[in-house]
Image (cartoon, rainbow over all chains, first blue to last red; front, side, top):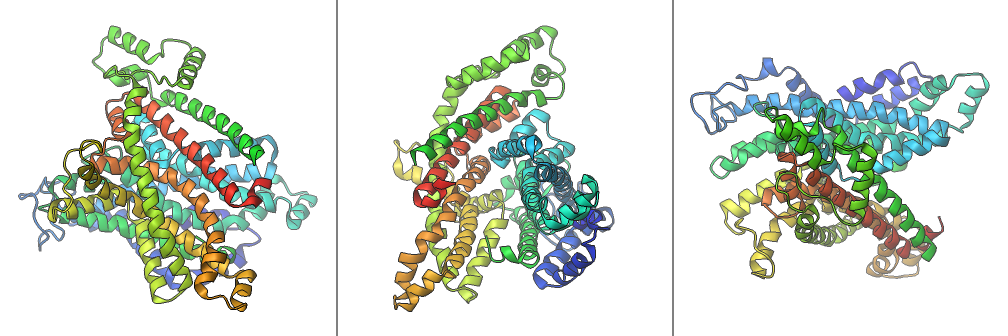
Length: 296
Length: 314
């Protein structure tokens, strides 16, 4: 999945790579990691190839609105007579795209800032960590709503906003490890041998924080979908006629008593996606980091 | 202890000032001219100039900043550029409704999660633990707006047990008010209860592994007494600090829940401000919510220190 794609180039070519690869190979075979991974990869592929898979055009209005699920329209049609299944498939592009994009942004910014803060210490540490504390003092959704209010709703802005909001989580994860590793014997040895700071950070420190980063990526993707669909539900995310799982639910509300299928299918898809991400995050944490086993 | 509280108060003031600065700077995020963004492309130069004056952006940034901060400290958050109403009093009139919802859902989630989390830990890996942990995972994964919408559909529309009628003040009709409060507070409590249950379970498991618990069992205490006297008190500490963090999540969830149930709290004000691009209103509400988050966390820190003397020393 994209989580692997965004982070694996960083781990490649490091000294610790062979050991880690085998560790990941074992972990990935565990059912509690493998099952959610397969479901998530399927969901991602379906959204990626949406034009090939979706039975109808997601904007095209069919003859009859509000059809119940049936043979021609597996999940029925909505109030404009659009095919619900096709809209769900295309909505996945927005919902998954925004969350993958924003978490990738958060991971890149967070890892960089966290490494700088934990490794170089001094005033960069002070500035970065206090800045992150400040971001954390706003409730996530409230900060997101405020930023949408000022920046305006668009897919690009959503990615930037959610990315900024989730940066502190990555900073904290990386900072803690970088702090400890910055003074570890093998890092000091690399320094004595004359390795540059960039080289030490990318080959000695970074590979050792990959496990918690993977866990954080998985959990953050779930939260990012939660925020994106929440904003879309409030009308501040993807703008109609572009479908997203959140705005499909909010537009189903006026009809839900008579046509509950409009509410149920998007709810199941959102719930399943987040459930799989959380299960994956939990599984990865337990398998990759024995110290944290059973916590939370 | 007094020293601890004093130190925490000083950082509180600093945090609030910084948060206020960020909220002030948010207006700078608006692409182009905020006044034009409020009024639209068709507005005349004259209207734009009036709006710029209303927003205060016709003056140098530093002057605006000092003014804004000075007024905010005195509790004056300015006036709405759309309705001309005083923002502080609009916030004050809705604050109680939001606080009511938050407090009730925190209490509700603690009542649900602490006993169930304890049971799950005591029956580790047995059927009841697996069932409770799975339900908690589900509660964690379902977004508030999905849970809320489904509850409205079932209890409000299908079964008509709790119809969503117009908002009633507690003073006017206590029963009707409480009836209206049930669904939104359950919606908010579910996600929170799931997080607390998981924390309570793992924290309890951690404590049950300790030597003094083995000693207590070895000296013949029955299991109920071991749990009550030796483990609960220690297991609950991490939960207290988690509740502080969760209040931020609840304040966020509140925005969506209030929209679903038409609960006249802070977020109705926030959302109407967002939709009409009433920037000062958005800034005011966001500032108040952020300050509440900070204050709650200070209270939690102090409670934590009172419960666990080891914290005060660090």
